[in-house]
Length: 55
Image (cartoon, rainbow, N blue to C red; front, side):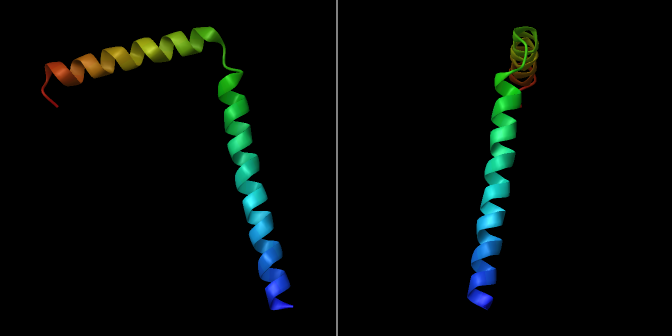
């Protein structure tokens, strides 16, 4: 019975992980384009500041 319980727990754990990954993918794929543009601009500014300060 322990083997069966361990396998069930492993399967449930893997399913939960896959569901979480799926939710993340769906969330980011459904983001508005404005969010993506703002994030890209922020990242560009952040990286340029890092270069300017020699980090």
